[in-house]
Amino acid sequence: MPAVSKYPEELKARATRLTVEARKDPDTRNGAIARIADQCGVKREALRMWVRKAEADEIPVETEDAAATIRRLEKENRELRRSNSILKSAAAFFAAEFDRPQK
Image (cartoon, rainbow, N blue to C red; front, side):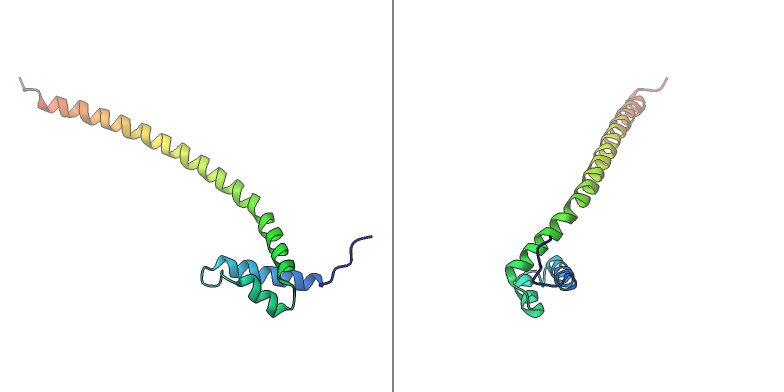
């Protein structure tokens, strides 16, 4: 038998969504949990736990995307460094050709 919740699921979802959105904005980040908990009529610690769970559920998706982006950018960086090295060698070769006296 599941535990009986003190708060309806709709209230939990709404309060959590409002808090997560408020915490993303630097202007409203400070005191967001306390302010929204008071507005929605829930305990601050309960809202804090809901927000932690919601933010933890979002992290793996972002981490996987960030890791893939980092790998892609590192690969691109290696290719660009290699191309740069080839171009520098070619420029040095042709510069040396122009410095030689002509027959």
